[in-house]
Image (cartoon, rainbow, N blue to C red; front, side):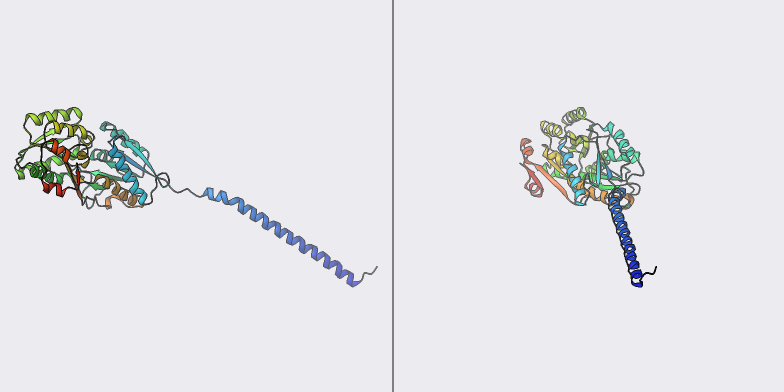
Length: 354
């Protein structure tokens, strides 16, 4: 049977269209499958990406968290971190270890931070920094407040610390001379000055040496009295009275700072003009204080943490020293002691407490 040529062509044309439609359908299905798999894979890919590292910062202090000074210092440190983009709970985690004025606990707390493998240890006060130094030679240590880091062996020099420690020095020993001169300006007849110091704090020995040098130059006799805690503080003031001290200088020390209200009370009872290296003493009833702004030092310590977390080595970061020092005078205490504060001292004061 013959079939018309036109009919054959028509049959082939129809079959071609079927094949073309089938090809297009398979292509469309393939695209849909590819798109579906791509969409399904998005959350898995996001989950597979590593999360940003949460840096852990250890904070070591001998003080009690109940002390309002420590709360102020900590907030200044956290504020400094936030200014540099380090938000607690987002980019950093702070591991707080505070000895609550029990210095014998500091060694165990230091070992805890080392075992946690924190990225940086921020240590406050020389005893805490020394323990951190003995506990680790690899974890960077930032000194929030150190009295004399060179004399106590914490750093090789201020310009090139060496090792794994850097931070801030408050220059307390060098300020002893100014504190003694302030006493002489207030009471020119002073000839015997008692020194209240803590022998368990290595930095107090450095302050004692400077005081002895200054006393020779000013022709003042010194009466060094040790105080490791409350009972020795009381007995020290008893000795000052018995031996006829004219005034007292209280060294920079965390234990003495913790008992600052009691020290101010004993100085008032003993009728002794007193000068301190920490301004918190004056605010707690002490007569005069001359020293750096410790709150600002804690805030500044955050810049060292920032640099170290970004790759800097402590050995290459020079130790900073304060450039501004505050004189705080408590006129209420002066009046209670029967002292007339010279106008020249009041004029120099950064803060006068009425």
